[in-house]
Length: 231
Image (tube, rainbow, N blue to C red):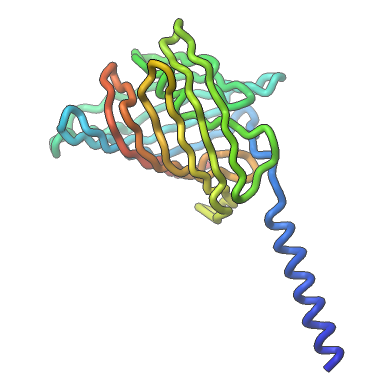
């Protein structure tokens, strides 16, 4: 009986060690190298002045250069665009851009082959700003982006909370609730849930909603789902 008790105690202790190891805080950040490529499927449901608009496309994100200061450059190719306006399909326009990201996740520069309009505002709301300390479940952090009048942007406040660790599409991820809001004269915002690979910060899935976000110069509300198709 005593031997059985020792075995049970040892097993419980081993499980406790495993549990503690599984909840070790992580220095969450984007880890990249030149040549990294990820393909995503995007679905957007818009309300365009009372008319429902559904947009789908694939996005190919390719890291082209990593700088010594931790910033990096990535190409973004939007292709196979399909636009449905009130149930009727119209011609979609594929796009391409080059985006330079700072080490903290903020956007340094956007270069596009088509007019992006308020692209910087949308990018500032959509990017992920990394925490400055290790995080785990229940961790929270808040970061800000300063507005730039030359780019037509406003101050933006980002808030994050780690809800859980989940296995998704073959990745160990942090499931994170996020909220980003323009302040001052800006009125756009976005909120939702993002699943990030714990090891590399790679977005595996994002789902959320946008409010008064400028799209082709018009403030719109929308819901969206972005899902990784292939790393």
